[in-house]
Length: 95
Image (cartoon, rainbow, N blue to C red; front, side):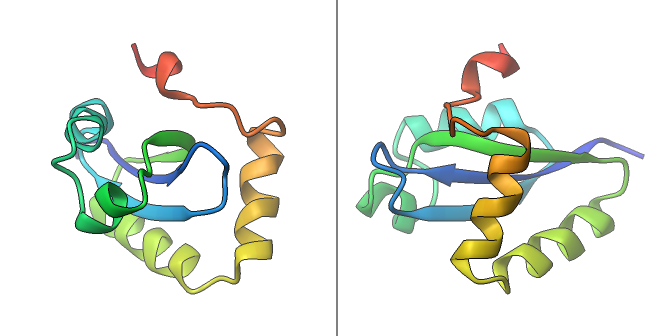
C-alpha cells in the first residue's frame, strides 16, 4: 500500500493547531504554504509543520487523524513535544 501521513500544523506563535491527513505530505505542504490548503489554515496563518506520523495504510492514518482531532489541546501538545520538544518547523526535514 501507499505511504500516508497525519500531520499537525501551527502558526508562528504556536497558538493554533491544525490536524490533517494526506498521501503526499510534501505536496500538501506546498498547498498550505501557497494558501491553497484549508480555509482555516489560510485564515489563521497556519503554515508550520510541527508533527507528523507515517502509515502504510490510509485507513490507519484516517483513524489516527480522527483520534487526535478528538483530543484536548493539552494532550496534542504532549504528543508533539514528545517528538519535537522545541516545536520547530519540521518542513526542512521533508526536503
